[in-house]
Image (cartoon, rainbow, N blue to C red; front, side, top):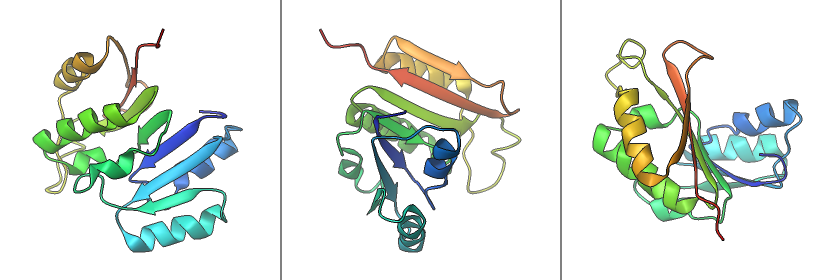
Length: 157
């Protein structure tokens, strides 16, 4: 993500940008997309003008994801979506990215057991992702019940 254009969908307070910077990763351009005005304002304050924070709902207004990002990231916002919206959002996000779509989701029905969360079967998620690209990777060894998927677009000739 270093020196890349990054869209953080559902950015909240832009904590992911701070995490990246602490790891020595500095995106060339960071765009945070956040539906809640109070969260977007706090993200703007935390970023001190070094990022663009856009207010918008990625489900209701998916065109907001089309910002020219090389990498589109979802950190924690997808488990609030029902099954159909989850897959529709992934499809749109893949269309919006120039190179990589990276997202995490709760792959354990126990962790996604709250009324406002939806559990997504990792086998089904991978099956869907492979309809978008042949280059799909899943990592689930870092935290029990959580998984991250990386979908890379084919290189253009």
